Image 1 (cartoon, protein in one colour):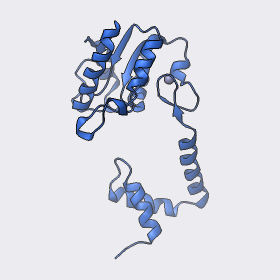
Image 2 (tube, protein in one colour):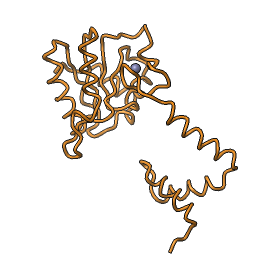
Image 3 (cartoon, protein in one colour):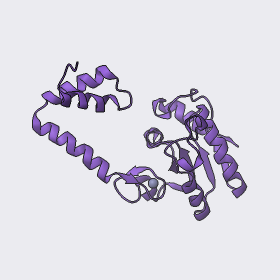
Amino acid sequence: MDLYSGHINKLIAELAALPGIGEKSAQRLAFYIINMPKDRVDHLASVLQEAKNNVKYCKSCYNLTDSDICPVCANKNRNHRTIMVVENARDLAAYEKTGKYEGVYHVLHGSISPMLGIGPGDIKLKELMERLGQEEIDEVIIATNSSLEGETTAMYISKLVKPLGIKVSRIASGVPVGGDLENIDEVTLLRALDGRVEL
Ligand code: ZN
């Protein structure tokens, strides 16, 4: 028997499908939303749609941005000859928060995972290689996570990039195994970057 109205059940199901939100939190959020003033609910709905409709990939690094080129790539003061390869835009944000990295990025939007059936063609790897073929690059810093998938991806990229004669390095371990970069404090991130080793 359904305890709630069909509409509320639908709302709870959608919220529960979001990452990190369990059934209990989904119920709490659903009831909170139902009790919000109508104009706030309308605003929330339109913010969601606007974000989805207007956020796109940076044409150069595939960071999420409102314009064709993201602010990092558009910044002439950055070192455009050093590319840090990260798994997602949240990892990029974590490094940007340190304020110490002066190069640019490439966002893969995932990592290679044979277990989950995610291959090299499913992440923005071809796009990285195209970029390396077109731009003058001194170093590629691989900052994928230290999970099995992150390490697999790092090895794969290194094998592709090294023959191009471009220096390839990997951020130092010390980043906890399986740890998402975004959850790691800035000091640890900077230590991992400074202690990077050439592959
Ligand atoms: Zn960019």
